[in-house]
Length: 210
Image (cartoon, rainbow, N blue to C red; front, side, top):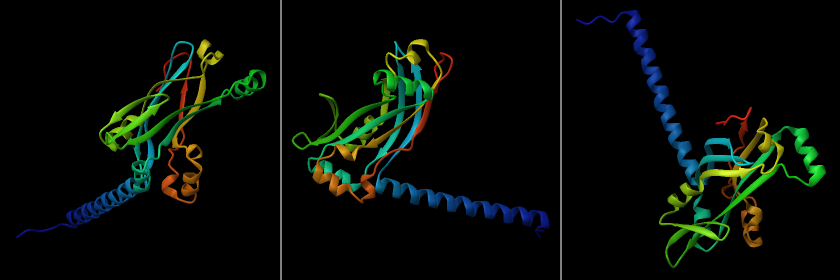
């Protein structure tokens, strides 16, 4: 005969409760993941910054998913402009002085364009006049989400003297660069409002920051 003491019954009840919560958490995670993939999204996974030759260099990894509506637009010939944005947040007085003195902008942008080439049935990722081709959309989005040694704050005293600074960055689909007809299509549709949250970056005392 097996006897279950009050202690063991309490322990068994607690274990069942935690197992139930874990199963619920897994189910909710699956639902939110499916919704994220369906609607599209951009999430920062890692960012870092380092000192370069008279500049600050930023690297990052983003996970990108686009909605079926955006994928259909790609297949119908629309080029999607994705923009990396950087904003200097500290030192604020330096930023203000440079803007007034010589039109220095405490911001920087880097634009990629994602397109589909119907003849080759490949996706293309454009940076200026250069482009790379990919067999699948997932491969193109994975490449778009990898940023290496992006030069910002070039020829500034921050870069020259390796002074402390703080900034923030994000990646977004820039709807303002779409043709006017597509801008109207994007109005009021959440799956076209695609951008990551701001992520903090910075360096201190001449040392590389992560």
